[in-house]
Length: 130
Image 1 (cartoon, rainbow, N blue to C red):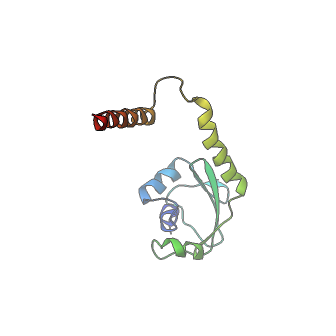
Image 2: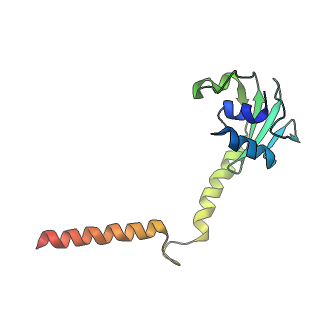
Image 3: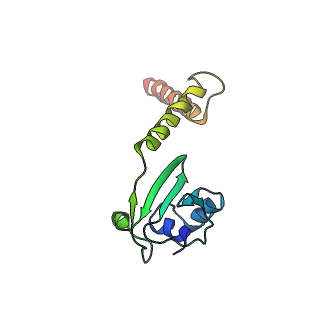
């Protein structure tokens, strides 16, 4: 089975086209070698997939006949991703708050919605008092 189809079958990518694009960009490795989307996958292959700034480490156990349900994914692969990779993702989430302090610069879309909701609530309160 092709690597792009395998990653789609075991639900690492939502569509096969996204899996193909990831292979072309060099985000997928088999046995530490960057691969093309057409590369075949065999049992015992070690796959590294870079997705959302996290490197997922997989070991292929078996080849699925087609896309499998989420509960059946563990039959076809073993996820050996180190916990440190997910800790790195958590640090990135906290780092985003560092770049823009609350109340500085132009309001974001979320800030504008909160302001609009606040103003609508205050107008509703004034009308109910009349």
